[in-house]
Image (cartoon, rainbow, N blue to C red; front, top):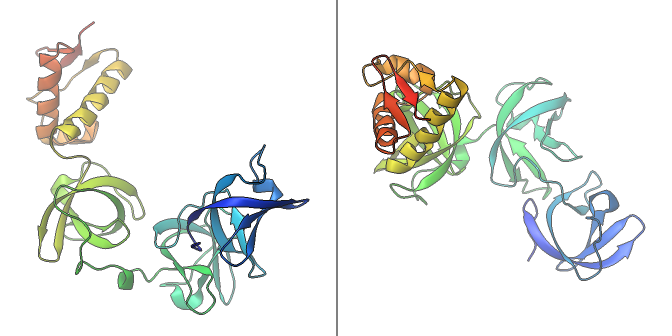
Length: 275
């Protein structure tokens, strides 16, 4: 069974001057010559993305769009008509957003957070700014401590509302954010707590995995600053957050581990890399 708006692995059935035809369920699907990998022959299996071209023909490509059906992505508008707008999503054919699916009139050159979906009437891929109806925390597909993909949705009084795996919503609290976030930013995080239909999310990895990431950050910064940084456990949380983009708690755990590993030493005014 093939899926439009998704990646499919299809077998090459025959060759033509303008490309190759791939085996579909009840039809042959053209992969244009410009997207055929060098050395491809009949019988090979190729991973391709399927969508409809401007003449409503099902077509394959080895290009990788910025998102597939069901994904929430930040895309740039390239042109606008009375009927709607066209967004650049990494393929030769731009993605259409009907005027009725826009929250505000789109402007060429601006970026918009949209959900990619398959239109029930046409069967074509399209996009909508009206994301909320596709998000629900009633039937959760995540558990506490799960690593998840996050997209920043909007800022709230208590933190940032994020979209989890393009399906659910959660909150990253302000005191857990150590860098500037913008709508559409893609992040990795984990589920800290689920209370009913409310989900608390933390950016990064849980526990000591986060410390591992912080270790790389501190060692890199030491290298970039000739082996010395004027920060230690007496530095303020605000200073640590601004320079290292991490909490003071994580910073203290990380430099403690680096000291035990004899990779740094403490001075009166900061930390120094051990040669």
